[in-house]
Amino acid sequence: MSAKTAVSRNASLHGHVAIVSGAARGIGAAVALALAKAGASVAVFDALAADDTEASATAQGAVCKGWQLDISDEHAVERAAAEVQARLGPVSIIVAAAGIMPSGAVDSGIAQWRRVLAVNLDGARHLIAACYPGMAARGDGRMVLVSSVAARQGGLLAGAEYSASKGALVSLGRHVARNGAAHGVRCNIVSPGVIETDMNAHLPKPDINTLPARRLGSPQDVAGPVVFLCSDRANYITGIELPVNGGQLFYP
Ligand SMILES: NC(=O)c1ccc[n+]([C@@H]2O[C@H](COP(=O)([O-])OP(=O)(O)OC[C@H]3O[C@@H](n4cnc5c(N)ncnc54)[C@H](O)[C@@H]3O)[C@@H](O)[C@H]2O)c1
Image (tube, rainbow, N blue to C red; front, side):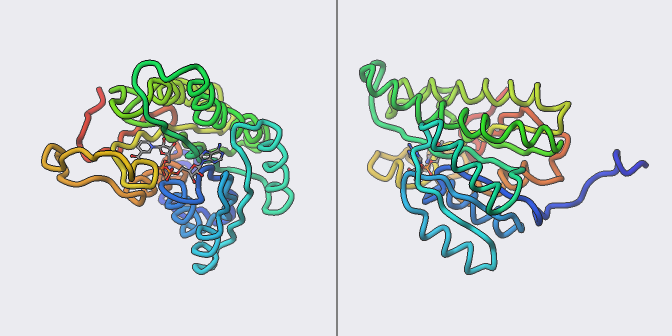
């Protein structure tokens, strides 16, 4: 078996530099810590200060630094990505987890529509645009976009724009996967079910007896699959939409 076709057993991310958006708390924070634990240097892009994430990662001997910015601001993301490259090294991993989920129904007004699309969808686009050229030039890029079960099912508590943004992330991810494959850039989508975080702390939760796993998910439940998709173990996986929902919804 040639080195190229040998099964890679390498789950280590030593030497990699990752940008994780939305990692001041919740799912993004768990992802940032799990990537740091796997050996990556991690940059956090978040509207909030990422002091807790930085402190936890640093305590386990990792390099982790926060950039406080609005992910919907294209130029701020470009600038910060350039700073990450200058301070931590070339970026080989991005995880787009920043998101907002205002409540609503079918029409919550055009202002809310534009804001949710700007954060949830444009934000991922800005990260990709800032990092894809370098990744493709070096032949190594691993991207994970955090979508949602709402992309397939719609949502009852979130506004329509949330479901639309998450559906569009799946299409965006597949487009990048198709075009990036020949350049060593993989892009996958992870779609969590109901995960206990600040985002939904104020909302009614589903009766856990109606969930096959009999429990809600934790941010760590999502972080593990994300790290796997960023690792060499997933070298031939690109363009998938991975449900992480404890059996709540099976994807065809
Ligand atoms: N919690 C769930 O049940 C669930 C389910 C499916 C998908 N998701 C998705 O997972 C991702 C993380 O969600 P979470 O539950 O951890 O939510 P969270 O609210 O706990 O964390 C979201 C993070 O994104 C940051 N953020 C929001 N707007 C931003 C902006 N404009 N610029 C930069 N950062 C910004 C927040 O400051 C926060 O740190 C989101 O994309 C969400 O849609 C969550």
